[in-house]
Length: 274
Image (cartoon, rainbow, N blue to C red; front, side):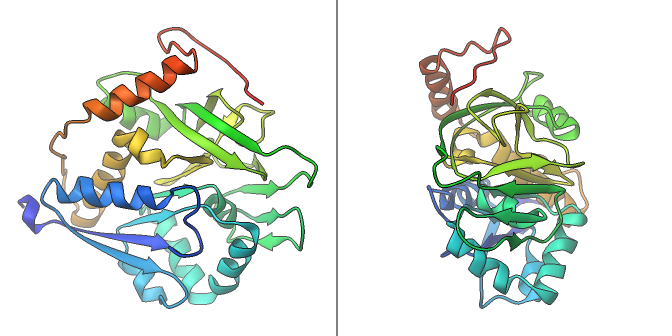
């Protein structure tokens, strides 16, 4: 099967309601890296006008951040057959990248600073709570060592055996506590899930949840390639390998940011930026 025969359907969760802090860039980057390899790409808006069948068509799902009010609107819509379809996709291994507000709606609930608790889908065993209006937001650069077992192994293979680190930017008021769901990684620089237990994000089946905006994938293109490759392998049930792209500029940008933060990844570093 040649590249021109491969098609990727990207399901974009609520583009108008959940695209804060540049998260739409993750959709654009996945699309471009697929097109550059000759794949056909369809972007499916999974919004209020979408159906459960539209969700089922998605080979890869992208969800961004949202303000509390928008998050409430999303959860009012994401009910019944649509919720069941999304739950089924994630449970069956459809890869996804979920940023900030999206992991909160996939968890058990989110308690905003004002208003009632927003019930989530309960796919991820986590809860998120805003600690109060007088609490300082978690804003700043974020560096994470990926420790989720299966994902870390895949990333190491893609990076030639190097330990995988993600470089991003967080901006969130809510704090997240994990239950049995595995953490995406451990914080090297920044706050992460809650600033107390050293964890950041979550990983479940093939879904990556994180507080990292940026957008995340432009700073970590190997994550985008993992999502694309995983989606195509699952869809076509073949050992598909992606052709190499020139990521020298992105990798140089990562290195500049790490140097700016005073981080040398050749030696263990634990910094806590409040």
